[in-house]
Amino acid sequence: DGLKSIISWVADLAVRLDSIPWAEQRSIFDQNIILFLDEIDIHLHPKWQRRILPAVQKLLPNAQIFASTHSPFVVGSVEDAWIYKLPEQGQQVTEIKAIKSNPAKSYALILNEIFDIDQDFGDEIEHDLEAFYRYRQAYMTNKQAEDKTQLLTIAEKLVDKGEEVKAIIARELRQLSRVMQEDIDLA
Image 1 (cartoon, one colour):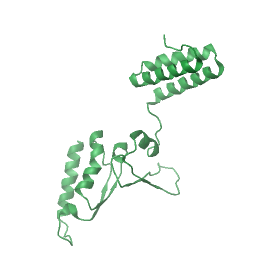
Image 2 (cartoon, helix red, strand yellow):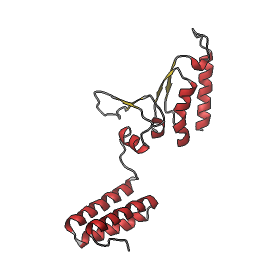
Image 3 (cartoon, one colour):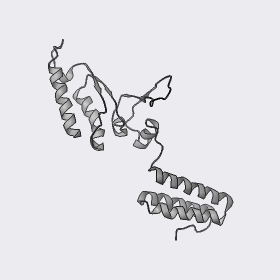
């Protein structure tokens, strides 16, 4: 659907541009235009989301493009652009500041800076990781067996969630073992 949509609006744009009596006779794609694209990423696979704006910029080199998106892939794909974070409905804002685009930023940084998302995992995993770190800190501070038991219980739950989380927990337990100078390992 996304590819069909792109082909459709590009074809429609070409027809509309061709029907304009331009002052300068040159390719319709080389004309100076202002283009508004709402939700340019809709129905597109992330690979295509990363490619769409650079492709439009290449197709229309003299266009001033305004695009709305909820995709960090679109935001991270453009060079020499300005990003405006619009306020959420009901949010009071006195000024909307422009942020210079930077394709060298990671998607994690874009999610944090532009979309205000600072979590790497879903809510359930993030909740469990917070508890893990809380029990780890409590054990390091108080050295209570109860905190260690809770820590290992939640660690066992987390390692079953997936390889990435398992690697994080394993690294944290190895580091805790070194700091506490004792074997802290899952059963």
